[in-house]
Image (cartoon, rainbow, N blue to C red; front, side):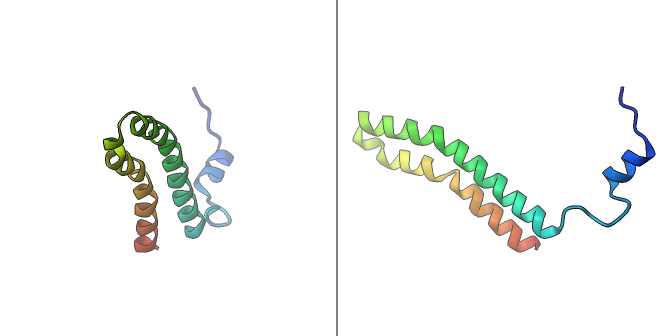
Length: 85
């Protein structure tokens, strides 16, 4: 299906010139993707929480908790970066 040549294998495996992505670059990508995913998740949760609070004031605390949960993903990513790096 795919035909791999030795030149392509050298590029993929980074045989010459060292790694193309440093540790700091990988950490930045990890935290950035975690923040992007948290923002995407919070978009739908926030809209649903505001709608639920508009219907019933007792839904404020559960809505707040569910809105904050995706943000812990970014905090966890930052902790992992500092522990590993």
